[in-house]
Amino acid sequence: MSERVRIYEVGPRDGLQNEAASIPTATKAQFIELLADAGLREIEVTSFVSPRPVPQLADADQLLSSLRPRPGLRYPVLVPNLRGLSRAEAAGAEAIAVFTASSDAFARANIGMTVDESMAAFAPVLARAGELGWWRRGYVSTAFGCPYTGRVEPARAVDVALRLLTLGLDEVCFGDTIGVAVPSQVAALTGLAVEAGIPLSQMAYHFHDTRGTALANVAAGLDAGVRCFDSSAGGTGGCPYAPGAAGNLATEDLVYFLDASGWEHGASLSGVLEAARFIAGALGRPVASKVGQAGGWDPASGAPLGRA
Ligand code: HMG
Ligand code: MG
Image 1 (cartoon, rainbow, N blue to C red):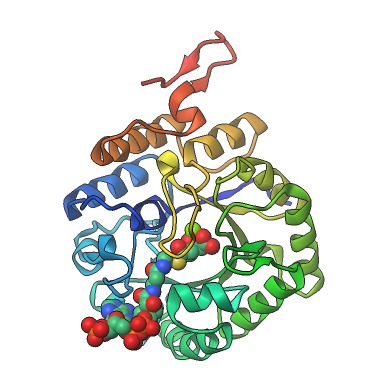
Image 2 (image 1 turned 90 degrees about the vertical axis):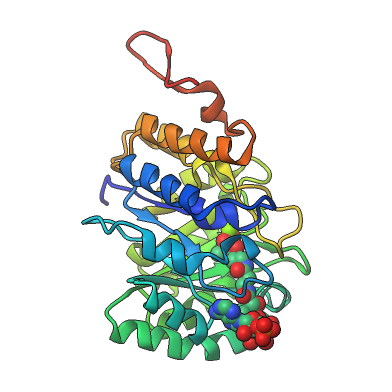
């Protein structure tokens, strides 16, 4: 198994989508530049969704077209339907993520479709993206629990993932949308997914850190062979239809953990901290994550590293 881990940054999209205060497009673009400067190579930058539920990302068209292309960088965007796909194409997208859920109740609240209906809606979106040669991800939200219907059996999440994969995906990402999972459940879901034929190389996890279990869940995912994890610089994040969900796992917490555990990933902690502080400043509050507050740690001297 490779010693390299992919960090999939969702700060500009998940991190900002639920923020009430309006953030200028140029500030978002600067945040993305700082994330790229920090060595992050996959940055989910925005969503081509209806501006009604997610007004914060209504500037997706201007934002994506304003980004400077950088070799080796991927800027995926969320797309819920063909309308979103044509907007994304016009703005220069080359990577998309569709998003459904394990539970009909959440899918209905979030995208106005049942899970079955979402498959029908995504089929032409993913087919067209495939023709264009784009990278394609599919999210299975509420993979462990739903804010409306409670516990989700892992077999259900795996079933939805398999159906998404047959539509043509590079990667399926299981989302712990409201942050209820614990490591034993991550091990169980990963094991079931592998048994069902989903390759580990096409699997990712997206943990919200609502109850402080996200990093432990990453450790369980790593033990089970998964090598791609989502995180958000500064630990921001939430979904308008996931009541009570707190932020995503903070990228700086993930980077500290991976560095100290000897995994390669390509991001620099100081660069991620700079991006996290920049966006926290734009939002008018301090960085809330553990490593954002404590800094990293220099084992040679015992001193904290990169503290604000
Ligand atoms: P709908 O109301 O069911 O469908 O929305 P509609 O076709 O009747 O459209 C309603 C209005 O939206 C119409 O405008 C459409 O034109 C417009 P009106 O005529 O009323 O003025 N519209 C669009 N506008 C711009 N771009 C589009 C688009 N499509 C329709 N692409 C829809 C259905 C899917 C559009 C809506 O429910 C939606 O946009 N939902 C997105 C919600 C969202 O972004 N949620 C957060 C992201 S998911 C997440 O955070 C979870 C994740 O992080 C993983 C995890 O944590 O588990 C990924
Ligand atoms: Mg999320």
